[in-house]
Length: 161
Length: 372
Image (cartoon, rainbow over all chains, first blue to last red; front, side, top):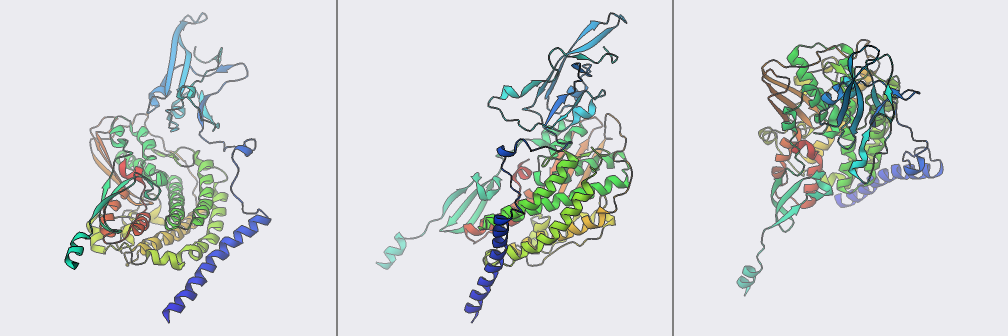
C-alpha cells in the first residue's frame, strides 16, 4: 500500500514544484514582469553604478586642470599592499621663498588594489576619491598601472605648494 | 572451483581523487576517497590549495589594515568577519560605540546571513540536481547585493565596518530597500519549501544521510547550523550577545535528528529568524553618530584578546596577541568551516559518493575560510 501512496505523494510534490517553475516560465514569457537577468554588454549605456561604488581610485581635477594633491604620501603609507606610489619633488616657491614639495607622479596600481578605501580616508585634502568605472579588464597587467594626475596638471593655488 | 573464483574475483579498495577542481567541492578542495565499489570507506582532506597566509599578512599590517583581509576569508559573510575585528579592537581599547552603529551592524549581519543562506540554498539544490533553485536563490541575493552596494559601495567585499563605527552613514534608500526586501522575501520563503523542502526526491536524498550524533558533534567541535542540526545549542548571538543582539527577540533553531535534512531545516528556519530580526530593527534605527572618533594610530595594550561572532557558518573567532606595538604580534582566525569539514569522514562513513556531495553541501563550506 505504501508503494502506491509513495507514487501519489511523489507525483503530488513534483507537480507542486513544477507549478511554481511553470508559473514563472509562462508569466515571464508573456509579461516579462519578473525577469531580472540583464544582458550585460547590451545594456552598457544604461548601466549605472551606485554613487558609492568602489570601482577605482581617481584624482579629482577641476576645470583648470588643477588637483589638490601636495604629495604628502599619507595615502601611500595607509595602503596595505603598496598599490600607491607618490613621487614628489621640492622646489622653492618664488613668492614665499619657502622650499615646498609638489607632486610629480601619483602612480596607482589598480591590478593590486583591494578597494579597501584606506587611502581615501587618509587623504587630508580630499584629493583622491572613488571612481565608478567597472570596466577593468585588460590583456596586459601593465595597462592597469595608472598615473592619476593628468598631464600638465598643477596644484590648486592657495593650497600648500 | 567456487573457492577459486571467489579468490580471484575479490573486491579491492581503491583511491579516487575528488577535486581540487570539482564543481561539488565549492572551491579548490581535494578529497581523497578510499572506496569499495561506490561505498566510501574513508575520506581524507587535502587542504592548502588557496592558502594565502592571511594570518601572517596580518602581522605586518596595522589594525585598520587587517579589516580588509577578513573580507577574503569567508567571503559570503564578509560583513560579520569585519565586525569581529572591529569589536575586538573596540573591546581592547574600551571604545563605546553608539546605538546607531550597533543596530546598523546587526542589520547588516542579518542581511549577510540571509544572503549567505540563500546562496547556500540555491547551490544545495544544484548539488542534488535541481538547477532551478540556483536562479531563484540568486534572485533574492541580488536584492541584498543592491542594498549592500548602495550603502557600502561593494557587493561582496563590503569592508563597511571600521574601528569605531562604520565607513559611511546609511544611504537614504536603505530603509525602503530593506522593507521591500522583507516584503518580497516573506512571499518567496514558502515557495522554497514547496519547491525543495517537501520534494520527495530531495528528502530521500537527505533524510537519514550524513548522521552525526550530538556527542560526536561536540567532540568534533562542530559549530553553527551544522552543529545545531544535531541538537547542539551553540549560537554565539545567544551565548555572548554582541552589537544589538541582546535587544532583539529571536529563537535559536536546533533540530535533534542530526542528519542532512535537519541541517537543511536549520538554515531554512534561520532565514525566517533573520527576517524577524530585520523586521524588529528596521523601524527603530536610532539617530546618532555613525562613527566614533578614534586615534589615528591604534595600538593595543599588551595582552591576549579574543572576539567571537556568529557568522553564517558558525562560530568565527579572532584571536590577537599584542605586544603593545601598532602591529599585532600574532593573529589567529578560528574559522567555522575548518571544524565542520573535519566531521566529513564521520558523516559519510559507509555511504555512496552521491551522498558525499549532499553532505558536503549541507555542511556549507567555503574553502577560502578553511585555508585562509
